[in-house]
Figure 1 (cartoon, rainbow, N blue to C red):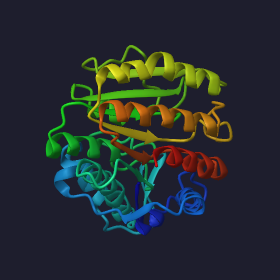
Figure 2: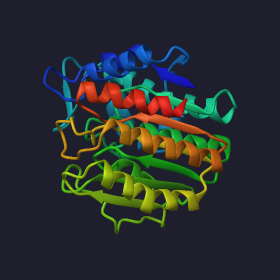
Figure 3: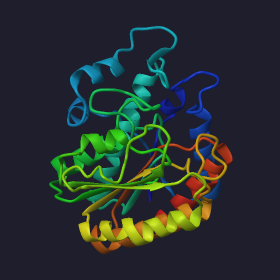
Figure 4: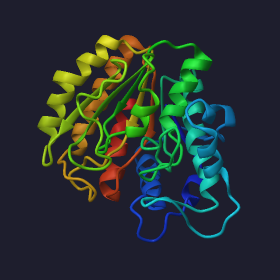
Length: 302
């Protein structure tokens, strides 16, 4: 298994009290290095402009890549960047592209992108929700265009709906999006009636839902739909903020539940995609929960 990361992702400074802070990635890296000695560590490359342009408009790209400023710059009430964020965002998006090449070229079956800033809230035209570029969307669009895939699936178990990913692929039937997320919280999207071109699948979890409900929704609703789609490549937007310890939401999912779902996704990828899975870090804001859940996720992908 290959892990893509880069020190530049630690230099994305969001300020002293921001939940999406460098310590998140430090915790993930500590958890992986402390638990596994057989991972193939690779430096995440810079995303190329053409890779970004497949899913983002030129004005948004220019906004993020404009580094001629000092201090902090707010892109929306939750999303902040410093000059070093430019490189971090390019590395985070580039990790997904490199991971696609690695699994499609047979170097590995599975890859994990331990990067920040996260991506699934970023839309084609705007940064939002801590996200600058939509890393998983950049990678999925690259897989379609450069590797000729006709069925790519994105599984998103972050507690917040990946509104940006859904919007980007709303009318793209080659990409199917499957998301479970808590109802009634940011970004207030992802209703079950939002279907796109029939390729969008959302399931809402009520506040307080725990592992039993989480597993049942995936086992009874989402995994059968994913099986029917028969993806040639499976992406995971791996957010761990549905964990019971997380401060930003109210689900009660535990580490073992993330491991169970990852195991199910790995088996599904073996059935349809030659085992190919590319996972990218999204949310998760309690450091202990993030460290443990991310390690459990990677353990099932190895």
